[in-house]
Image 1: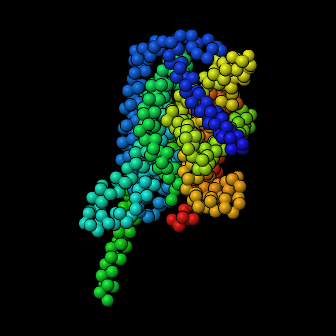
Image 2: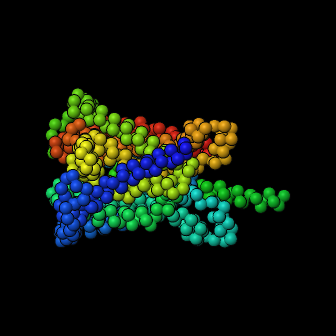
Image 3: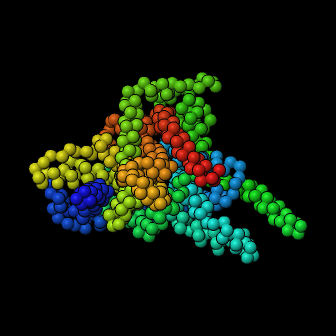
Length: 269
Length: 313
């Protein structure tokens, strides 16, 4: 009796959680196909694809999509080049300042983002980085350092040293050992880091807005003005477009992310 | 004898490798540190100087453009920008709101994450899978969209009010209130906390739970005395990360919150862009940072405690 009772309770909890998480997204998504909507009906008055053509024929929105798809991969690449060697060093070497560096990465993340961008403005004016591609890239890469350092560091650390030693004993060079043993085993963790970095860049709005407007609008910054200047339905269509890459990545890497690579990375060792 | 002779070069080689590892490790770790020092550390120090009234050097442009700048005389710092903010009733109200929203959101997030994690640990099955998948979904939705979606869902013509109206009932409008700010904060913070807490709980050995059960402990007793303490470090990490994230958040309160009182992230942006008072914006940033540092200290302490326990130090 108590068992069925608690079972019902859990199902109710799952239902409420589903409503809480999915409800707002579904409610917004339906709006993208709604001709008009009368309160308090639960469905729109009619269906239409009109808002999609509005979005696809609007040049400014198209450019925002292009900009986002340009900045996100380059951010991931730049971040990987800068951070992956550091991640390996944190995992494998004991060096002076190691702990200070690890805490530094974290402290950089603890400073409020809006405050950081406000502080960055002075420096960016001085270095002529305002309204430049490089300036936006710097802002985007800054937001990915935590992911690209910590998660791969944990992945590298989890590769058993004995395997590397065995490869060395069998005559493999240091580089050969790294590329044939260490890297393949750490790859899922690096993949998770890359995806988190991609999403961080794709999602970055405040800094891009401060540094890039009006010359470089990305999808999230475009969303800011969209919400104020266009009908709700257009913002809904744009939201769906903006969510597509994220959901695709979710489906591709769900197993690795839930599998603990993310969680492992957030414990400094 | 021969063994000793042969063992020696190996030791020397190992020591040599450790020494080269020291410099190589340092050099490999340098690039992200330089990036952080240049584009976070340096501007933050600069901004701190600006908040204390030092308006020369790189701060000159900002100080010239900005209004209501408190300047220091000579080398003695002035705290008048801080004094101005801490006697400003609106700032104090927003500070209070920020602390309360952060506290409530963090508690809700950790409780939800624990609920999902515990269910997954003890029951699993289809419902467990559904719960954990649901909790991770927000990770993949840009915050701008999430805020916008949540605003519509709880608005005057939103879903909840529409459903209530079908039954002739009323339902409060939560959009543009602090309720949606809390809802939005919980929504966006849940995945991260759930991932950390779930993986922490999964790592608790089943044998210990069985042992406690065999000794006659009830389910809740096992949870409170065995499972949660053993997963303490990941839970603390999840809590601190959530709190720091909510504390400095901008997009959620900006989109879904009221004009006033609202959170300090929105104030920072207002003071910087709308009021053109960069010094006051920077002062707010440092107040938020001071609170975040307090939370961060707990995080660092928890990490090093766990590193010590596992013998890594």
